[in-house]
Image 1 (tube, protein in one colour):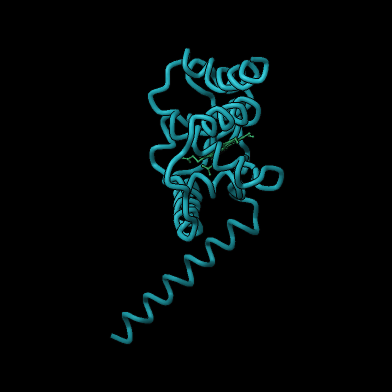
Image 2: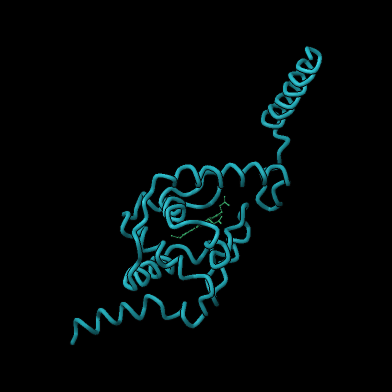
Amino acid sequence: MKRFVGGVLAAILVAAGAGLAVVLTGAYDVAASTSHTALGRWVLETTSRNSVVRQAAGIRPPSGFTDEQVGQGARHYKESCVYCHGAPGEDSTDWASGMRPEPPYLPDAVGEWSDAQLFWIVKHGIKMSAMPAFGSHHGDEDIWAIVAFLKTLPGMSPEQYRTVGEQSEQGVAGGKAG
Ligand code: HEC
């Protein structure tokens, strides 16, 4: 038993030493022009996912969203997010494909997250990735509107994407004029 415990401890020390050697010698290639190693990717993705789940656990989302919020969120999305994440009928910019991790295509990705988790990601961003913290310049109301819009992205057609937000803006303007 003693020998077994000693073996496990030695293995842990060797692994920690190897990890430290990678950190200190520059052996890990940080170039964004190549992909992460499978291990590097697993460490980053797992850390990030578990962190979001934990941090968002205390957030209470509203019971539902209005069309007005969806329209407002769409305008924020078209202004701040589409360049990196793309949208139905719109590719992300060329430089977004040079990021590691590459920003996911959100119509396919948002279904994996709850409303509270989406709110947390947009408000706080994700360290060591290009995902910015929008909470530094957007209030909670704006961020819930963005979440309202994100929830409508899966299955949205390019035509719907083109008009969402614009329609409600015209509606408001038209209402005022009338
Ligand atoms: C400068 C590029 C950039 C901009 C602008 C940006 N994002 Fe991101 N976003 C990223 C990257 C990169 C990731 C992947 C982070 C990771 O995997 O660790 C990400 C991840 C996300 C995720 C998690 C998706 C998943 O399944 O991993 C959500 C949700 C998200 N962004 C929403 C938004 C919204 C909403 C906006 C606009 C308000 C926005 N992002 C603007 C780069 C960006």
